[in-house]
Length: 342
Image (tube, rainbow, N blue to C red; front, side, top):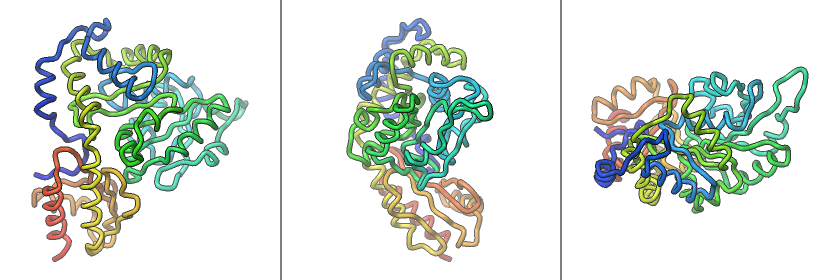
C-alpha cells in the first residue's frame, strides 16, 4: 500500500529504533530525563531560542504557545484556514479563553497590512487583540511558504504594537528547505514556534515548542495541566534528536517527489492543480471536473493499493514523506491514471 494521506504515517527508521531502545531515561516531570533534556537543548540551539519544551502533540504545542502570550477574553489573529482554528478542537477557546479573528490570505499567507487593519485595542465593545499567529508551511493551502521578509515585517509590526507572534511551524523545516535558509534565520523574530517531530521529520511521537526561557517555563506548567507531563520520555526524545539533526536534511527529496506527483496529475482529465504553489511536500488538487466526489475516488484508489484523502468533496491532498520514494510516487501516478482514464 502506497500511503500519501499524510507525512504522519511514517515509521521510525532503524536508527531511531536503536536509539529508542538504548536511550538513557529518567523522570521528565522532575526534569531528570537526560535524553529529553538533550532534545530540548538541541531544539533551542537550532532555532536560536533560549529554551524548548518537548510535548506529545502539535495541538498541545500550539495551545501552550497561544496560552503563554494571551489572557482570557482576547482575540488571536490567524489565517482563515489555519490549523489552530479548524483542526485543533477550539483549544484556543477551551483552554486559552481566546477567540479567533480569522483573515483570508492568498495561498494561506497573510500580509502585515491585512493584519494591522484587524488589530483591536482595549475597548468596551470588543475583544482586544492578544496575539498574531502564522502557519508555515500552511497545510490546507498546499504547503505554501512564507517569504522570510514577510515574516520579519509581521514580527516587526506586531512588536511595535506590543504584540507577540506565534508560528505554527509544524512543517517549518520544509519551509526552511524551500527558502534555502536555516530555521534560526527564518524564525529569528518570531516569539514562539511549535514544530512537529512526527511529520516530515519521521519521528513516531512528539512536537517541540521553542521560545524565551520565561515563556517555556510557564509553558511547562501548562503542559502539566493539559496532561502532558511525561515520565521516562527519553525513549521518544531519542528519535526526536535524530529527526531534527538528520531527517531535516533530506526534506528536499520529499519536495522533489511532490513536484513529480503534481506534474504527473496536471494533465489528467478533470484534474486541476496549482503547480507554482507546489514548493514543499503537499499537493492539493481539485477533482470537481471529474464528476466524481473525492470520497469515491479515494475508495477507488485504495482498491488499487493507494491511499489519498479528500479535504472536501472536491479537493484531495497528497503528502510525500520518507516512506514513499520516487518509484512509489510513479506507481501512485499509474494508479491515479488508471482510475481517471477509462
